[in-house]
Amino acid sequence: MGKFDIRKYVAANETLGHTINYLINSFARKGLRLISIPVFTYLLTPADYGVLNIFTANVELAAILFTLNGTVGVGRYYFEEGKQDFNTLLFTSMVFSFSLLAIFGIVLSWQGNFFAELIDLPEGTIKYIVPAAVLIVMSNYLLAVFRAAGRSREIRNFGIQKTYVQFILSVLIMLLLSSEIYYGRIWSFTLAALIFGGIALRKLWMYIEPKFQAKHLIYLFSYSLPLLPAYLGTLVLSYFDRMMLNSMVSEESAGLYSFAYNIAGLQYMVSNAVMNAWVPKYYKQMNTGNYKALDQQGVRLFKIIGLATLALVAFGQYIGIVLGSKSFHEALSIIPVVIMGQFFMTFSVLYKNSISFSKKTILSTIAILSSAILNIGLNYILIPKYGMIAAAWTTFAAYGMQAFIMMFVVRKFLKVHSLAPKMVLPSVAYVVLTAAVLGGFYFLNLSYILDILFKTLVLIGISTILFKHKVYSILKQFKSSK
Image (cartoon, rainbow, N blue to C red; front, side, top):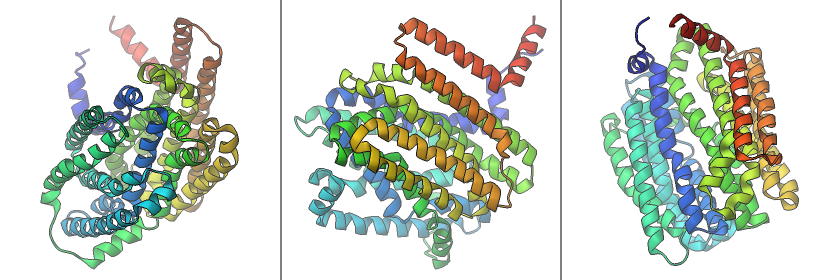
């Protein structure tokens, strides 16, 4: 048996290579929240941390709503129509999106007091929402174009550079401030938008042809506008609980919940990296009709995500203890619940890909809006009484509902190929039951050594169940190598 060379294996496996690049990029981009937690929880009070997260939520909202979701159809056009007039489509989309952002930026600056009262933020922060959104929009364009072109390494490098420069700027400015320290983070968004917005534009320049065509706007809006409610619904599920905690309970409660949510965001980093890497191969296999390989890879990737989710459920609270100051430890108990909500969001993406491929985006809208409405309703009823605990469980319920609605509408109403429920539901059941066992350890008050030991044994057991054929294969190879 020849010596196993990991570099050759990665080079030969296209999806794995892209996964590694996207995973590194995802940890760099989303990992800013993780890396910044010990710094920000030291420098900021829970209330200030809440203000910062509510500001970020509104920036994410502006990047979608103020551009009418115009970045979404760019990558889809590349896969569907090829490169023939892609450059003019990209130019048309960017001109339209940034024109809208400029208009809304003027409106927010002009009526800052009104919007500050509307979204419960300090008035001085309102004028920075659009500049911060510019960085997100430019990054989305770069991701859409370079992902379609298979340039995952450059996406990775851009993400790492942007993340760490922005983090360093945040900390330096915060240390110079004596009050309203959260402005250091907010101002860093604006500076990063200037620096990395320009870098992204330079990288995209070769894909841009300065020619505005109305037909491209029609294409983009025919794809992106039906998805706009779905994307807004996704933001509702991601951020609305924090906004409601901020307005109905306190800024401190919103800050504590945001702390737990940011720890749970590690699950999204892994799942987002895997799913992004799978997109080019997914479309290729769908177009060629290679459904057997598609199903096998989809199930395998989903199990990997499930196992990573369980590892985070097991040890996420330790991450919170290490990274967060004691004033934030009150939120540790809800971390497993939030993580499992993120897992169900990943489950829904398996079927959302089929909707994107078929361009029947109204189905995504139905699933996501239904779950968003459930989330808002449950939060409105339960948050005033139970606070952030209610927010965690209502988000879990909403994401679970979204996943099963997405699976149902795809299987019922789409004629394109999708994963059969019997291929994924057993894994879902195993992950949920194991997460309940792992989460229950939090309430047993075991010593750290026993807690880690028992959780590790549980993870080994579920790994054997999820990947039993792989485990047997590895054991056979191990025996034969002796």
